Amino acid sequence: MLEVDAIEVRYGNIVALSEVSFRVTEGEIVTLIGANGAGKSTSLRSVSGLLPLSAGSIRFEGESIDRMAPEDIVRKGIAHSPEGRRVFPGLTVAENLELGATPWRKRGDTIDADIDRVYALFPRLKERHKQLAWSMSGGEQQMLAVGRALMGRPRLLLLDEPSLGLAPIIVEQLFEKIASINQLGVTILLVEQNAAMALSVATRAYLIENGRIVLADTTEKMRNHPRVREAYLGA
Image (cartoon, rainbow, N blue to C red; front, side):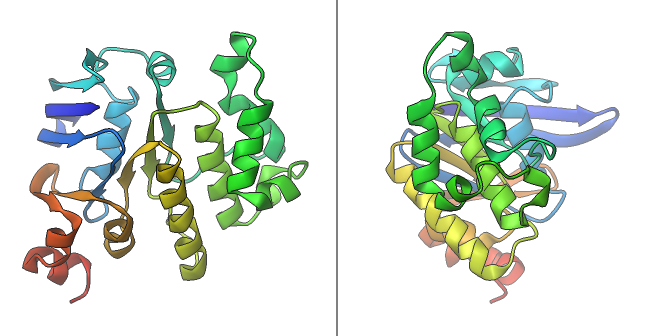
């Protein structure tokens, strides 16, 4: 489904990613793990068209997307739930969700069923559909960010650090929802600093350090790899 081949990304003279390659097959949850600043979020921003490549290529369902505008990538079926949630604080829950459905609104499609699906997945959002986003808890805002991304009817969902700043019990609940989203047929590329949680839901994992992929394997083998256990699992 997604093929990222030897990409390089630069911030001025600084090389943020170097020869990064990974694959995501339809139906999988694939995770990129690594320390803060390793290049995980940069990888997602490259896939969603927010950062230009200096080298390499990105293909989605066989089509090159590395020169596409972000809005065109969304229309192809890739949605990005960014780090830090980035909800619109002065808009209500319902208004935030409606913005996520902009491509379908422009086509004149009804979005009622999409909203119902999000509310079924996150009942708390339905309870608070008239509440302004700024007044919600961090966990609720994260639910809203994921729900807004789902309003774009993605085939591939990019999740960037969904557990950031959340209490452990909320993190567990959120990751249960991530697994449920995948079971509904959405392929997921997950960036997550909490390696233990990421490896608990994903099927395959890539370890990125200093802008390079240094390990790639099934999550079971990654959990038992000495490098991963010592540096990222506290074992």
